[in-house]
Structure formats: structure tokens, C-alpha cells
Amino acid sequence: MDTPDALRAYDIWTEGSRLTITIRKEFDIGNLHQDWAQSIIVQHPGPFREVVIDLSHIGIVSSTFFAGVMQLHNTYVPNGSTQLTLLKPDNRVLRTLTMMRLDKLFTIQAR
Image (cartoon, rainbow, N blue to C red; front, side, top):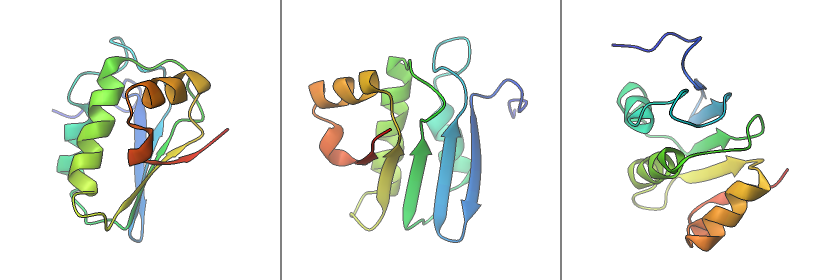
């Protein structure tokens, strides 16, 4: 069952071979269920040359976000032909990515 737009914490659109996911609410239990990335993958299987996750509207994310972003990476970037970009993540997100040694898996465009 689809989540109504008002409750969903993200918006998705495609333009040519680019998939853009805009996170528009804080990532926490109240705004996002655990299969958010899987629902994107099912609705937009690709292939895409570029996948952009726009984080410019949020600051706090939960472990669900990191699990989902890794699922997106593993699906869309299996052979290195797709670029996955994190657009304008909060400094807390950057620190966590670095601490977990995940920062090298993404192209990061800072705020």
C-alpha cells in the first residue's frame, strides 16, 4: 500500500537517466518506516546514470536512513556505472558517515 504524500518523508522524481530523492522531513520513526529504500527501488528500478539524495532540508537522521542509503547504493551502484550523490548533508550526517567509513562510497556535495 502506498503511503500518502503528506505522510511520506521523501519526494522522488526522474529526469532522463537521473533519479532524485529529496528528503523533506527529519528521518525518525515518526516520519519514515524501515522499508523506505526498498519502496523506492521497487517503484524506480533504473538503470540510472546518477542518483541524487537531496538532504538540504533536514538535519537529524536515524539508523534507518543509513541502512536505506546503503541499500540504495548496493542496488544502484553495483558495478560503478552509477554515481550516487548526497546533496548538502548536515555536518552530523557527514561525521557519522566518516566514522562508519561510508563517506568514500558517495559523492558528497557539502552545504
